[in-house]
Length: 268
Image 1 (cartoon, rainbow, N blue to C red):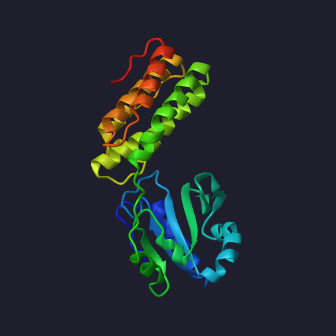
Image 2: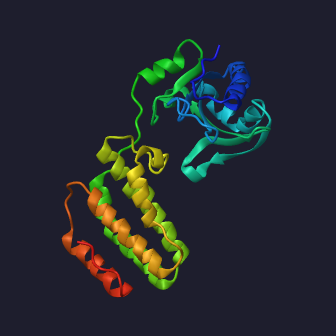
Image 3: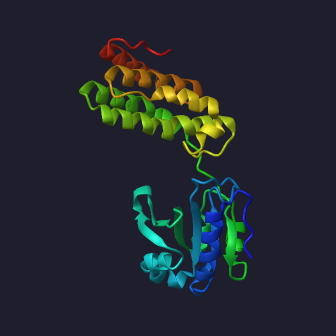
């Protein structure tokens, strides 16, 4: 019998109660685990279910070709698509009804289940096979490389400034969002000793930083976007750990932005 985390809602419990026996009936499948909010006991009404489905390696190709059909057996499937857009083609992203439940089904060959970013909870398995794979290593989110970021941030900021100056304001806004998720949030999480999950649940995890990050957004005017860029750079300099700095590059970019914007003061 499934043991649900305390935060699991009826819609989560209903889906899993129906889906797990269907998956267990397929002899090609060796185990099912739940990661993300489920394994962290942090589900809410907006949470999706992240399921890892382990496949016997000799049946991997066949199962992958049948993923939509397998997903359709698990509940009232409204639609699904594969996860190439997030760099994970093994993923099948599904929406089930009637009480809408977003479910990510990640189909992996059993040995590949060891490669993960967190600690999934095994929901069902054959002969401890999935538990043994998970026991072979510890999952963790990749940490940012501060030097890698430092080597790129100033050229990125020059790019963002040019987008504003050219009038590509939507592109500039997207650039600022990229810096928030790729640079600022991971560096803050690294500094705080937290898992580096980007912007996911950042308002609850680091509320003071989240409040500061609101100033790295703005309406789509050059003045507001340059103000957001100024705050972005200011936050980066506060969060930047000890790295090898290219002072000439940094100053050249800051001087360029100051000169071109006409109102923005160089950050020291």
